[in-house]
Image (cartoon, rainbow, N blue to C red):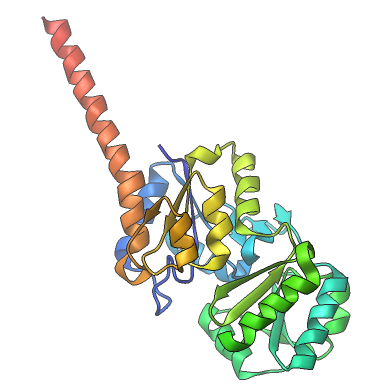
Length: 286
């Protein structure tokens, strides 16, 4: 049986309206009561992921910032953190300014923007986190950033992604989490590396893990898990590498996956165990 399940948020656990169905919440809580380690693996900042974890009763360490930080709610120190270096952070800020592309940054679990733009406001409202305006982001960059996020249309971000990959190569992890989001983290900061670290800390083998996601930044998560599940709405890259394709995020795909691979096998095991007990009683009577 699987002992751990790591679930992406946007496009996976959350509907397009950024909600979680009551049925899905109840199913996750059943899995937790059974002893399954349920965690979140998201590009969102910790404070945003924590709100959803609290709503669902998830107490496991959370994989946040695309895997750049693993942290437990209530703990001041992160279990694992891989920030973008000051040098690369400064270069990215310069590129964003020269190309006039929105770039927001994260440091000490605080969302920073150089100016109060519509994109920053819309993002903060969507994920329910506050933001801080700091005109001199270059000064902040000297401590490095947990993550940097470009927000723009695909026709702007797609060529930018190729350019950044050529510029930084293996010195940064660059991936789209949505069609309008391009995220940059430390090269070791991806959901797969973070999942390996957390599983090792908990003494869980790779073969005992399910990973569920929908977008390009979930590819490493599905590769790292012993069993990878793509949502019905997932991009083709993720579907192609998945061991199973569930329903969409708007059709309770996470609930369906947990029912099929966590709850139903457990119930079947109980039925078999009960049948064996009855059989032994019968043999004793004979």
